[in-house]
Image 1 (cartoon, one colour):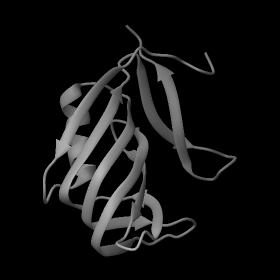
Image 2: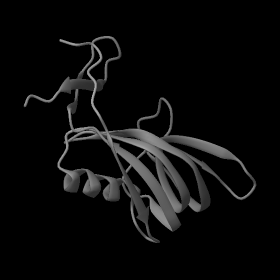
Image 3: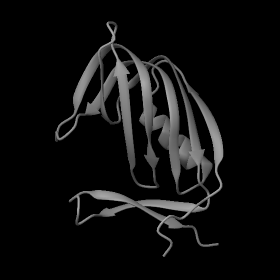
Image 4: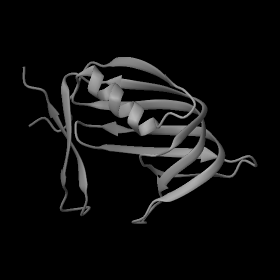
Length: 141
C-alpha cells in the first residue's frame, strides 16, 4: 500500500452564525459533501463557549466568555474527527486543545475546508501511541 496516498482537493468555505456549534457544522458539511476525507484548513471567528480537552487530560474543560478563534485545524472521517482549536481571551491569553462538541459561536466562524474525494480517512488502534490514530487509504473506484 502507498505510504502517502494523494488526492486532488476541492475547497469549501463555510460561515457559521451566532449560536452554531463548530463541530456539528463541520460534521453536517462533511456529510453533505459525500466524501470520506476532509481537512480543516483554517478558521477565524469568535466563541462564547469553547469545550476543549487539554493536553494529557481525560476530561473536557468548558471555557465560557468571549474568545477570538486564532486557529482551528484537523481532520474529519465518516465516524470521528480530530480537531485542534486555539483561542485568545480579552487580554490576549491564548490556549487550546482538542475541540469537542458543544462549543458556541459568538459572532461568526469563517472556516475553509479541503474535501479529499480520492481518499478515505478512518481511525484504528496504534500500537505505538496507544490511541486510535488516522489511517489514510486511497478510494477504490
